[in-house]
Length: 562
Ligand code: C2O
Ligand code: CU
Ligand code: CU
Image 1 (cartoon, rainbow, N blue to C red):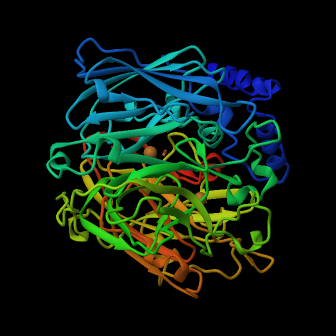
Image 2: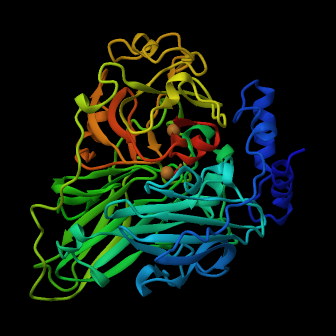
């Protein structure tokens, strides 16, 4: 029995504490085994992740910034009455600029970590939980051993040292747990936070900052009558992902902000495990987007609404100039359809159905001011690649999504550690054209051979709906998946949709495709082509669905960059 198994057993043994209720995990695994369908690869528990000694601080690395990052249980007052048992990150600055660490008072969300491009950073991750964990820097381009791949999981009481240079441009990233099989649950219980990178290009714009730059981390949770979190993906159809019936922003229900009549910069993150939002202002003000996952756009984009899937970020400019004192503006999620399988319609989604209309948070103008910064019409410049720059312009690397009630696969396979398919081996330094599409027939689409086999599978862009497992008893299981790739951020080259677009028409104006992305929402019947560089670092880099329930079910693979 490996040390990993021991920690895993200890981990599962915690369920009697009731905090995490992990009994659902072995039960689920057993239920799936009974059906001959595995939650994740059967080898997972036996072969994956041999126990390794956690990385230590290196004497040759001279950090500009050094910080402790603790993960620990915390009881937080969220609703009236009893506190809620959560898991929490909290950072403590050892060395570096004072504003590197900012706590959100009274919130379970992790401290905001603010880094400068070019800084050398050392982070000591201290596992103060009673279960294994590991932390990933979602959006950062770091060496493989610093990426928080679940193979680097540490046990309770252990410390893992990360050392990297910030090579990213300015942008809002996410740090979150990546404990395979428990990512969704640990994130849901609180293990996530914002990691903001700043750089000179951004500073020159003099965008609203300080009290005028506000993170909005949107999450949905469900509480029981004792104010404790409920997390029971099995109560829903597991395949849709878990949703809560309460929207929290920055860790608070009914989030409300007093604002001045001037421009604000909202750094918006979808920190939900599976819920997708269609964000809009209730007073008809369009949504002005100045940045996405990978930082600022070249120029602002103005949209009636913007879609935000789990793992995605938005940099939103909102100008309340000219509003009278007392004016209230509500950020809402508007109605939309088509992101969930048709069979799940009418199912209970915790009383707040995905795609229904509901408020996210409100802003109230309480101070009239006479001047405000103006929206810059030119925001940034960044390196762009064309399809002709890719190593495979005519032979895109496939990411085929397939879904069935108990298995969620990529390229026909559930997650396996260090077992890449031939086309998942990518040359370091190359730029790849990647095509993300729906390959119906869970497990039926075996793509073990050449990647050009993909062209046959995907001929004509429309998937073969008839006969595959994508259709079960006449019900269409196709749904939307936010696909995330670790490592360098990518460009969106094209989207194409085929078939009946009635549902798609409810979301189609909400995509911002002009910036650098690391997570892209792929709607049912949609095919998205992206251009992604694989520069600098070799090793295993994950790609997966950021519907975290899907990820934990095995909808995750690795690129082996060689
Ligand atoms: Cu935000 Cu691999 O994850
Ligand atoms: Cu990531
Ligand atoms: Cu998914």
